[in-house]
Image (cartoon, rainbow, N blue to C red; front, side, top):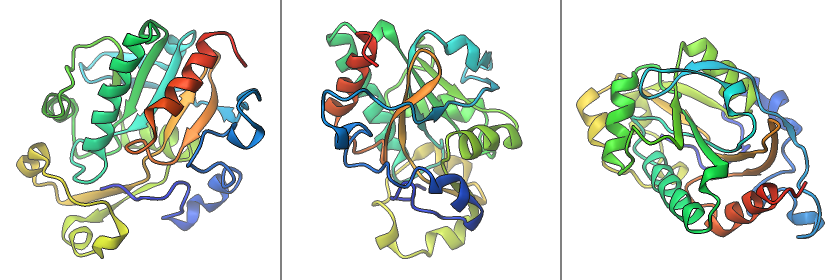
Length: 235
């Protein structure tokens, strides 16, 4: 279950980590205020990690250096924004391919629900029209503490767990409309993960260069424009 705002705080402990990024909110890439010709800012270094992907293969963040990364979070049991984020990922990849940029870009998604394993991650990808075997997507998981260090501490994306019954009882105005998720229904997990859903663009040197507040609704043209600038050698 995804929270709408980023970096709207959902846990007091995250306030300090996100305060420095409060100026950088969608509706626009971070360079928008400075004008289209301004260089994309180096916002922060993307975190280092060693996790496993959807096919149970180990992956180090160092292996992604040299490529532009589009980074999102997707909970296999999410019933709000995550299915829409998966659709956005698929659409962006098709657009990048049409523009001859797909070979320069790697999509990276973090699963933030430790109730779900790689089998559920693969099932979620299949359900949302994404082939788990594609080379352009790394859907990553690992021990909860490691994922938390990467996602919450490294990418400043807040998330926390609530009992499923309590999450279902929350006011619907705080969330996107519920979507059917057969993977979640089958699992019937006892907890729901409340999370923010930003999209990050990371340059080939490991610097986050743009942040969009909601991966599911960010205009594809804005993401493509920033990717094209980085792919063309723009700073």
